[in-house]
Image (cartoon, rainbow, N blue to C red):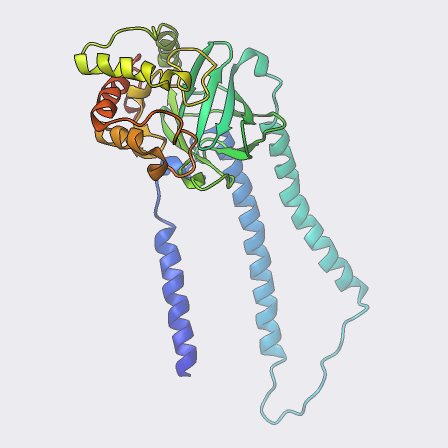
Length: 351
């Protein structure tokens, strides 16, 4: 009895912990509060599957309870074997047909949704963005707009935006739970999906495929703004002058150090697609460094001095001359003034 009570208490505590943890998280990083068409379709499929599973569990538990009650051994009753039902055609048909019906209930909307979310018939007349997954960051190239960004993906609300996904190294998976389902980014072939956000806001994205030691740190943001603000942001990004001189003396020295230490060889500023590292055009407008770190000068300096410590396995480590803390500070001043637009994550809200 004592051992049984101990197991019951452990089960109760574990169940309570699961209940509490299920309430943790943020609305912009959950599939259960859909803010876009793809997420809404996915939630409907989750509900259908859950309803079918609950129905199966209830039926099994009811039958199980009935059998326990009806066929339990009564006091003074002799052992006997209940009537066997093998070969009963009616029962065989019932427990064969019912699972088929349940599978059809799940399969039909799933297949329909799969084809719907993979439909690219309207891609030519829509916004098209090439998305490249890298260890451990995301790059976004806007085809028609001819602009480049990294880590922060800007889209207009109530608009289908088609994403052409590919990887530069290993398999990654693009997932913004609150507005879309997920799609793999493969090195060999290009996958296409579309996303659509109903409301303005900042939605968190994750890599959903194990891709290396910093897989859990491969975050990005989707910033949904009004169509008017999106057009303004596009124009602001197009008008960026990579050679523009910063206002402060420290940032000016940082710009010079940025060029002298070969940073510009990997990180483009402007629409150049040639960079092998994240595009820094609107670095000062971002809210995270390397996708996950606080966006402040101290963090940027620490990142420049030792990026591998903050994001293990990233390809920036060891590929530029060692910087002094003073040099890193000046480069940080330069990067923080890269603010080409008034349309930022803060203006979109719910960061």
